[in-house]
Image (tube, rainbow, N blue to C red):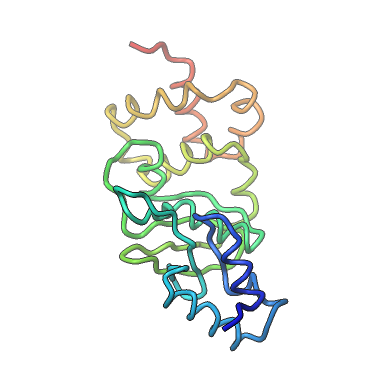
Length: 200
């Protein structure tokens, strides 16, 4: 059976690429797209990660299928939606290396649509936030601010401050000067103190 445009595009693409059903909207009807993707899944050319989300997998001789990280999938969803996202909660702490426990529910703030996407045993949750959240454009500063928020002002310990200080000291003075002002006042104060404090 000759391959259609959808199958040709998938076959010619690089391994590791994530596809969305909407990527093929200009090629065929929704039913034909679904049938083509289903056929490619049965042939093991594609893996279905979630509803409407597919992966052309990288395959390692030893490790087998190399799956993208939850963060990579979230970034691709954000790119598709032309939305900005920022890790929050336990995932912000994990991303900074402040905890080794990977949360099963990964939360992002977004200026796009609010939704949940189930990927295997994990859930990616996109929570709608106000545009001001993204006034902090530096990724590291955004992560640090979200880590403080996730921990809570009353729960900040010396251990937490010691662990996060090396991350704070990686921030460029220009970033602190221009973007820190968009964080809550108590976080601004603590970050400034950690930035100025000598490392033991």
